[in-house]
Image 1 (cartoon, rainbow, N blue to C red):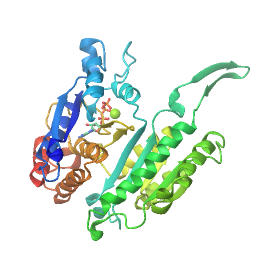
Image 2 (cartoon, helix red, strand yellow; image 1 turned 45 degrees about the horizontal axis):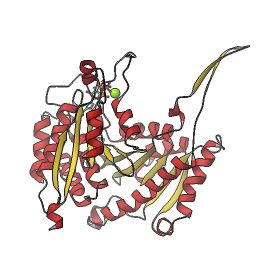
Image 3 (cartoon, rainbow, N blue to C red; image 1 turned 180 degrees about the vertical axis):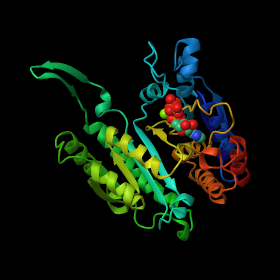
Length: 369
Ligand code: ATP
Ligand code: MG
């Protein structure tokens, strides 16, 4: 039948350091999904990239990797790259290259905390999704240094376009609706978000009225121009400074948050601090045709090779990949298995105060699947 013939091909790019431990762990979890919740056959393709690869071969993101991703793969999982402490001639980050080459224009970061939230006495669990525009803003890196009469001064340009803002806005509203569909698969009593889906638009248009004004107007325009969004989603705005304040005071008040590149960078790292270890926080680099799941943490050279890295960020990133490629039930099964392991609290890696290994945590998740 057409269902059993379906397959999903995932490129695996462990890259450096603990990437080589947590990406195989994520693969193991994907392979543990039973065929009734994961109807497609999974194929894996092992691919090279990273700083260590660069040191051996002079290139951080080899052509063969790009060709395989563009040709065979429906999505990919990326581990981590070690960032050299000094500038290295000819080196540029492979994940930045991947985002450009595959047109992954948004970085999506869920901030989830079930067990941890209850433990710290919060009334509701945190279940927020931050969508960061990922192609422009201050990251065009057009900076100039000038010599003035009073000394040096520097200017940075910031690009905000209708095109990029509209894509980010579309992503936010469509994901808000998609999250709502996922929630309906869960018993009402277990839902962390009880109300209508909501998108919070972050900006600072009281100061940057031209750039942030265009961003705000364009994202609002996406909402106004689509009846499905207006019917299914609420929209609100937050100035970036009060966004940070509110996010720390009442993180449960947010559902989907959409922000220009630089604000998105800052609030998503801040949000990671809300839920404890970096080892828990997943992300996805998303475009219209491709998705790359990527744990938020780096290569963690201090713990690499010891089988003690927390694999949960990578496992959740794999679930995000499934969610984005149309396998929401399988994604949900992984999210819930991870939550159960965290709530049981017996199998934890050292970053969470436990004594378990990467393999033990991975096996605990697999057993629940
Ligand atoms: P990089 O240059 O690759 O970013 P880094 O030294 O900054 O390397 P990060 O991965 O950013 O390392 O991690 C910062 C700290 O968090 C390190 O002490 C690291 O051990 C810890 N850490 C990061 N990821 C994990 C994980 N998955 N499990 C446990 N600890 C982690
Ligand atoms: Mg780091």
